[in-house]
Length: 158
Image (cartoon, rainbow, N blue to C red; front, side):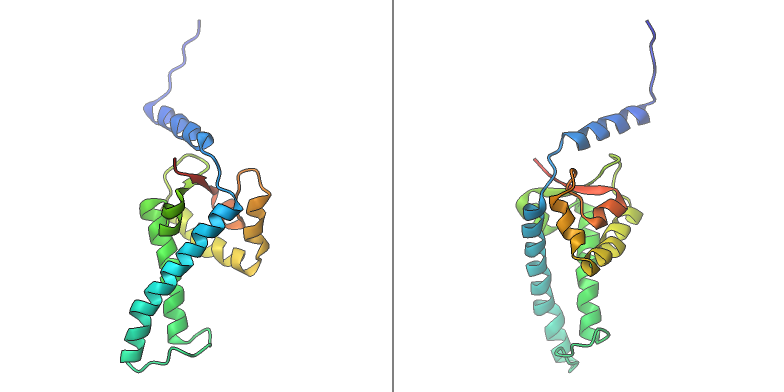
């Protein structure tokens, strides 16, 4: 009888991997509703904080130019929300409402580089090519293009 020994780190990685495999992947519609809730939250923050400050400082908020100050700040709010919420909670408020969270397929804790790549680069590409979000409905691990790039997926928390 042969006995093999694993280090504690290897054992923890195997346990984490099994945890990821035990989760049920969140499909397109659940992720869609969570994203819609996030957009409502971000839009509310922009309208409650950013727009009044801009009006107070007499900076126009109606410019549709991509490089207008209001456009830059609202885009920054959008990306900061997704990056910070995902890093510190593994989920945004929208995902919390629907019981979803972002996990790494490798079973590791989400690193800054993974989250930045997923939320900035991956989400930007997914927005350019709307198919990037639609493929969630067809892939076995329910990943969008931004998930494929970062080796992540969204699962049910419970």
